[in-house]
Amino acid sequence: MGYRIDYQSVSKAKKAKKRHLPFWILSACLLAVLLLNTVLKDQRSMLIKLLFPGDAAVTMASLENMLTQLKAGAPFQDALLVFCQQVMAG
Image (cartoon, rainbow, N blue to C red; front, side, top):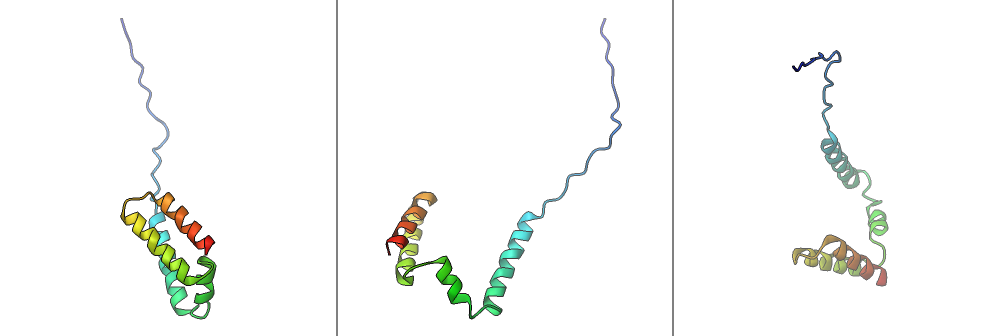
């Protein structure tokens, strides 16, 4: 002979919090672009030099090479490694 005991839950179910992270990331990126294009026009060249050190022509050529590798199906990590090596070599 079997028996079964059923207990009713006393606690209320927790409501799941809505995640708005993608919205905030997109908003921050748009704000940064707006800020760079309007307020910091004079500092834009300094920021570009910080992001892409060395000769700008070499950096742009390396960036184009990386994009070509990515379009050909190379893994991102390998393409980024080659890009960094070319920029550092100058």
